[in-house]
Image (cartoon, rainbow, N blue to C red; front, side, top):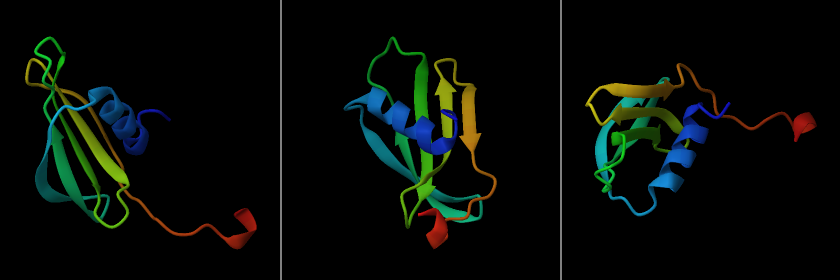
Length: 93
């Protein structure tokens, strides 16, 4: 469960601390327009070259995460293929 996009994004962003982020172009993820952000670590000794996260523009829910390793190749990618965001039935609240 810790590799689904929301959990992975939170974990990686917390670990990044104050590393700078910049916007990425919007892309469609799981049928949703997702805003992107790019994080490039400052620490030259890291094994992570960059981290990209795309989140639902309306709710902020991370829908896709991509990690590029220090060798420039994808190291890990996690994304939802479909997503439905709605209130649960009253009986389950």
